[in-house]
Image (cartoon, rainbow, N blue to C red; front, side):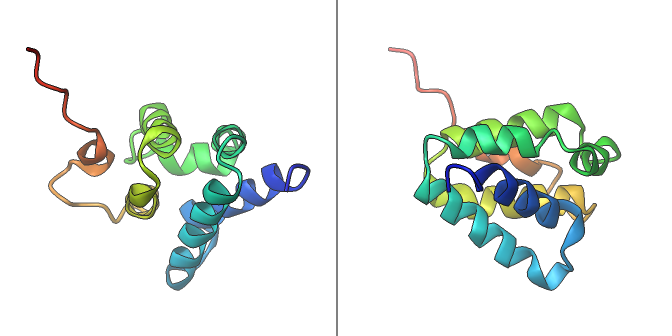
Length: 118
């Protein structure tokens, strides 16, 4: 995966946000999870590369929130527990495909609350 990882991640993210039909988005989410499970140290770098692709940038430029959403998605995928990756990726895909609507929270609902100060 070391050599093919960036290309696989790029294809996966493109499928997730614009290329795959709606009924195959879940397959892209699963592939994304597998890449993070198999290569936890390299996957965030590959994701960073994939998020720079022009079709991904264009998909987030409209109503999805642009660079802020891309940065938040990358941060959540890189630092949140793996158990939440599927839900995070699903929300990102819906935002890019202009189908999000869960109260406008989008990806922000995955940001953990701050620990109370003692």
